[in-house]
Amino acid sequence: MAKTGYGWLHYPGVLGWYLATVSWLIFHNGFIPLFVGICVFFGGRFLLRRITGYTTSGLKIIKNAFLFISLFAFGAFCSLVKSETNYAYFLDTTSTLEVLSDDQWIPIESASKIDLEEGYKSASATHQTLRIHRRQPKMWAKAMVKIIPQVVHIFTFNPSNEFYLLADVNEGFKPMNVEEANERKSSNFVINSSFYDPQNQVLGEVIYLGKRYQRKTHSSGYFKVINGVPHAGPASIFNDLNGSPSYACQAHPSTLKNGMLFSYIEDESMQVLWNQKTYRNLIGERKDGRLVVVVSGNGALLDVKEITQIAQRIGVYHASLFDAGSALQYRFEDGSYRMDFSAFNNTYDLGRLTDRLAMKFFRKKFIQRSPIFIGVKFKQ
Image (tube, rainbow, N blue to C red):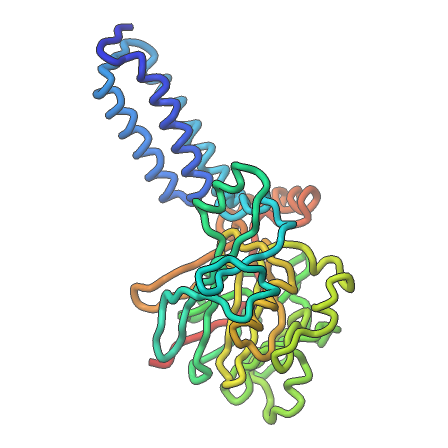
């Protein structure tokens, strides 16, 4: 083996480049990012060899094979466990949630208004983002939240759009991911909605094309389409609405009515599980009838009260919480504008045994699919 020039820099340079590639793969999941990451690594390694003048005469194939296999295996593993979203569970979530108000970070409790960044706007819908922040005690976590902002997405829809549920009613509400739901009807917006049990059986009342498929449960919230108009919120808001729903699904808990938080949401000691910081999905309506979806984006782990406070601050009048956590998945698309999110693996199915093991050790299936989705089609 011979080394010339700055050959002694080669190994530290390759090691640093390898670690940088590994770090990139943690936060960029999927086979396309994996392919790009491996290509960039080997391209950078080639440039380092040219710059440092490093030459080698042995074990070249073995070295390349080891580097390729290790990067591929690591990237595939990160994609399977969805590390780009689940990293957030390693951050500290005990500190107060802060939001931007007039470009200043303040506690959500003190915010009378919230700064929103506009991403998309049309007569049919708007998409806005809200940056959130929690103070982190550890240096690595402080750096992490600066590099990767935590955001909440806010979608607002004109009630003149077409609203519906997406479900496989002929196959007993066979669970789907967001891609499969969209295949049932091409939609501009799709999001999972109903809760389900460990056997993927949908929970609560479901009305699909005017036909009732499930019994009501104690869950207090609903999404309904009545006379073509969408509504979401506590069951009591439907008492004064005339007409039979063409679509309906239940939600839990109801969080807002007439712009006010329910007492059981204000008093966080009443339901300990609602204090858990996780990915959340709130759907409600403004006083003018526009449907609003307030939903966690990457890293935005919230409790029930926090996401309700956000909704209240942006003018949501009635609201309920729908299924989220590891099950959360949604897509928004119109022309060239597109964004999608899934909190956990919803693509790679490793079979029933893997699902059973995941349920045993982590209390959730390895692949996340939902039986019911809400869809929106824009009326141009």
